[in-house]
View 1: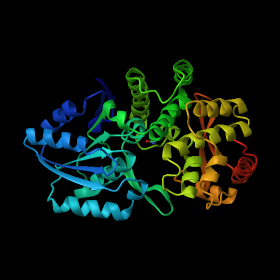
View 2: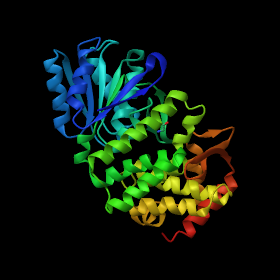
View 3: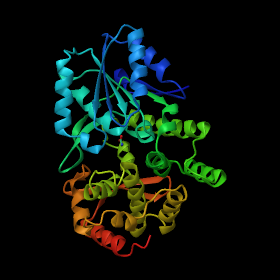
View 4: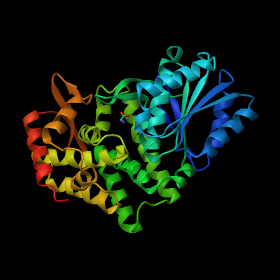
Length: 377
Ligand code: GLY
């Protein structure tokens, strides 16, 4: 088992990573709880076996156990579902020492973390991510929140978990499409500031021939490396006033596509981030910050691992949605990264070299026009 620390003074915590760590780690954590009551929040897509394992450990430790199961999908990150679960949790008669357990992907983690941050002005919570994306991104770093009709994650808080438990055995049942969506966030760490890691991923792809690879050593290596990168960044800049902004590479373009497509599963968040990163590098090359070949290398990497990152195909999948440059620019303006009326973009001087810049609306409009009309991939 690997342990990685997120160093944030009295809010520091460990990320435990390993195959089969769920039961021993949850037992270790539960034995240290200040109050013998837990509420597990999970969704209908998470196999029941994991909640049962937590329940068994809770019973063994003499802990009162409650379970709340929400619908799966991005639509659960709403005021309505938040209100429902907050009321259900309050009905259990919790105290400030009652611990919530987020057992699921990013939706469950973000929603549970936000509920934990506002219930009784803050109760402890633990993250047990069950998707690759949640393991390498959303479960670490304390960003919690819900979506509103204006955009993703526009209501939320920075609220750190007490522990993160990553059991890689859980990934065995993860569908290929979701595995790849999570893989995109792993590639993001390489593109941000680790060209060597990108070479490692690219060489692994070439040598292994087929993706997604379920090789345990490889999985543990890439999850560990991603969590180390995220822990280091969050430890330096918890509330995103500097270097943490880099983690938004591909997100402003990607969120715009997600907002336009809707959250019905046609475009997973990781897929949007992959396309968003290609667009960010493409836009960087338009500005002369990097070579056009940098965006191509990234696009080819995603295509070669089996990801569908084609804007044209995305448009074809949702023929009822109108992909206009104006609507996409408008969606970008609704993202959180607007300051002083200007969109702040995470751009690149090439793979491994990130730069943050204010974007010019007109330039972005022309860029979207070009991408949507010239898009033969
Ligand atoms: N997902 C980006 C961050 O945690 O900052």
